[in-house]
Length: 282
Image (tube, rainbow, N blue to C red; front, side, top):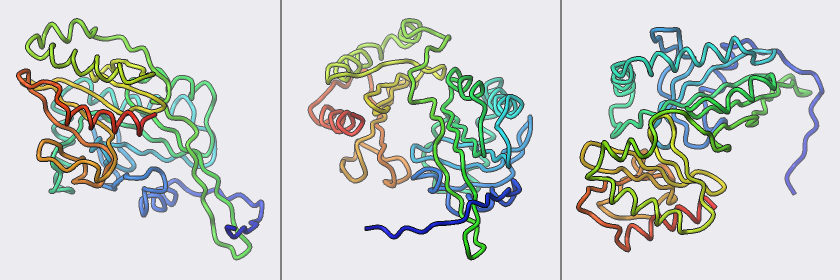
């Protein structure tokens, strides 16, 4: 039986900088696989409290709010950060250069930006609004209490994850995207048909023109390069040993990817990897 300890009911109001410092020492307490990159990163519309990478090498902006509710003004601030990158593609390139200065072993940066808000409380209307943001957003609430020895204990918990609900996003249709990438359409359609044939699979397109496949959680994604379709699948750490397949984070991730050209087909090895991901996601 796990040891149980009772702490006092005295809550603690931590300043934002102290809250940030505590979490930055171990970002895995927010999410397994999160890797710290930098603090107080200035961009054109403000300053990111914590810049991190997730296990799929996506940039993660983490913002901290002290005692009180995460309100509409705070949400607008985060959306303003995102808009700066949406408005000009060169801004992502600037961000990548900054990350590579800190992480010179970075192989490939996945350009989809995630937002994580660490807050004491959150308005219901703000939570609802997060579901229509196309980028992945998580809200992590926390409780800070003082124990009988005077030590502060922080307990984080995920209050919202907008990827857990399939979103309908306005943008280019799948048909329009395939028309532009006509030579890759056959292999894309073959992969999509096979993945959906595995069972109860939700499919949707993000505003970033990424095709997502979800069981109980997202387990596969596809997007177009100039000469290939990139397939990213959640196969599990160490499950695949092949020169065709590259794990995110140099193997320290459940996710990996491969690039498939229009001349390649859906072979048995690829089907095995997709099946692994479907099983893990279901």
